[in-house]
Each structure stands twice: as C-alpha cells, then as structure tokens.
Picture 1 (cartoon, rainbow, N blue to C red):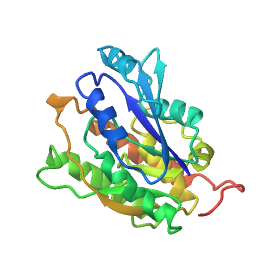
Picture 2: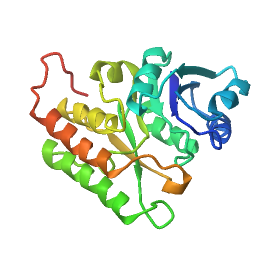
Picture 3: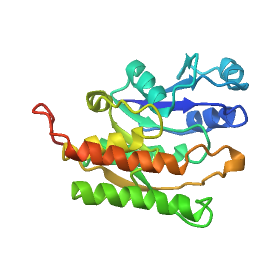
Length: 235
C-alpha cells in the first residue's frame, strides 16, 4: 500500500521546514509520498519549499489563496497513493501518530480512521475553541445518530478513491464537516484512535474562527437533509 500525505500550506514560512522534516522522518509501515499544496502563500513559504530535496516530496502551487478545502481537492486529484491522510503544516499534529492511524487499516479492522484529540491545558488555546469543536461534533452525532469524538480533526485517513467519490466542494475549513457529514450519510463510521495535539494561538497564526463553526453546523444540516444517492456504498 502507498500512503499519500496531503499537506495544505498557507503562509507558514516559519514552520514549513520543520513540518517537512518531521513528516519525512517518520518510519512508516508502507511506502509514502508527501504532497504539498502551497495555497497562494505571500511570505517565504514558496522559497523554503523550493529548497526542499526529497524524492518522496512533491509540491503544487496555487497562484491565489483558495482555502484548505480547495488545497486538499488539488492534492487529492494528484495523489498517487491508494490511501490518504491530511497533515497540516502548523506543527499542531505529530506525524509520528500516522502509523497508529494506519494500523487498523493494515490489519483489516477499518477503512476510515480519524485521529481523536484529547483536549487539555497543553492542547487548547481557549475554552471557546474546545467548546466549539465539541458542539460541532455533538451536532453531527445527533443529526446522524452516530458517536464520534472529534469531527474537526485534521487526521482523517481513508482510501483516495473514497475521498474522490465524496466530491467535497467546501473551499475552506468547512471541508472537515462536509467530509464527515458525507461519510456518516453513507453510514460509514470512522474508526478513531487517540493522538497527541498542541494547539497554537492567534498570535502564532491560528486561522480558524467562530464563523467556521457556524458554517460547519450549516453544512452538517445540509448533508443530513440530502437524500443518499443510489450509488453510495457502505463500509
């Protein structure tokens, strides 16, 4: 199996070199590629990426910023692996956890795996950020009669073909809710494994806001009321 690690990047000049180094240093149990989409960065991110040298690394550049969802859509369209996982470049997530996400897939226990964050004083920059995340996750559980622990997690591992079939259209952070809503609408329940997490604050470049939470709720409601297409498949 080959795993495509998809990294959307926007104005991460200070962190992108470390993000690449950490992702490529992991001992993965399968072949990998690291596919980075520079989503119209206006700082020195492009220059740092241009200096990176690893056969497993590919870089695609958007001329204008289009949002995380759009960057992932570009990455998925160019992915060469059978499976994919999203890894942000902000160093909040530890790529050393990716083999833990792969384990249930490799031993046949799961097809879709989410990394579940346990929020604590070291891993959340504000009370309202955590409550917003829990509120959106609870809304998904109520709407779809499911029980998942972390809808907004970046670590979503699944077959590339499955993600493509979801036809995710959200251009920004709403893609997290759209992906989960579409999976749950197909009655695909993500398998969850605990992961480590360290949230950064606004002063460090945190981009998600309360507006993204409101959008996520709207997207979940929209997906819940849509009819399940006849060609949707269950896990």
